[in-house]
Picture 1 (cartoon, rainbow, N blue to C red):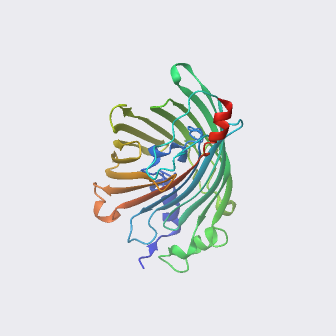
Picture 2: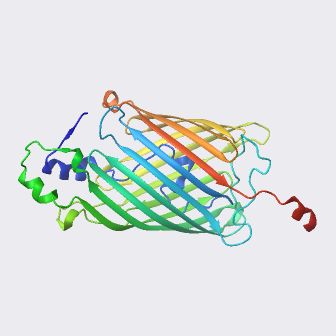
Picture 3: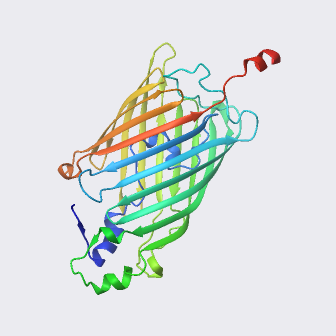
Length: 333
């Protein structure tokens, strides 16, 4: 087992510098922008539940790991949850984006994000409101509020000096911090286009484990996600360019740009390039009656390509829709 050797000073430097990009990032974010934007739920009339797992630096103990469970749905009205995959097709088409009515959307997320001895566990509830605009566009705003716990796992700490008095005094008795935090978001979209802008860690909480001042903060992060699907009604194929921009104080902005090729709106293959010298290959498919899966492999092409050993990301989701009531439809007609 390869141990991570840190001292007290290194630990604080790690928070301020190496972990400057404090929020998790996922290659599959364009598939589900709600991961980072509380306003991006309820785009369709379907209840949506999804599990994401991201594993980095495999083969190295303490490598980055992220697990996120998220769900959202429209509320209010008889059509808050609409019909979906009524023919029980195995390879079904994605649910359609709804753009003709105002929407109230509730959702929730719980996630774990860890690297080395540091970890963050968060639980958050979200609310969003969408309303129709001109020419088939929708606009929505949303907010998330929740609880987070940031901690240090002493079992992963190996001190250069076993009797390090500074470490024992600073983190020997308390290595966890609980705090409230918030996210906000804005979305504009139609049946083919999506634009989202969001901000996380809005409260800029100070990092104070056990009430000890460190001079470090949980900085606000900004995320921009946009995509557009080109789809010819006479063709089985669609093309979707995507762009993701991540911004935070005291850290270099990163940009993910790429594209996906869709087949029958049911399966897709994509590629992305991240300006931090990462190349991403993605593939996904709808299958097994309302389930879908996606896999992404991220390969470092920069100076640390021999050390990061690749990144694997898995996305599994389920759409909850109503079965059609044919008798009721016939009666109404």
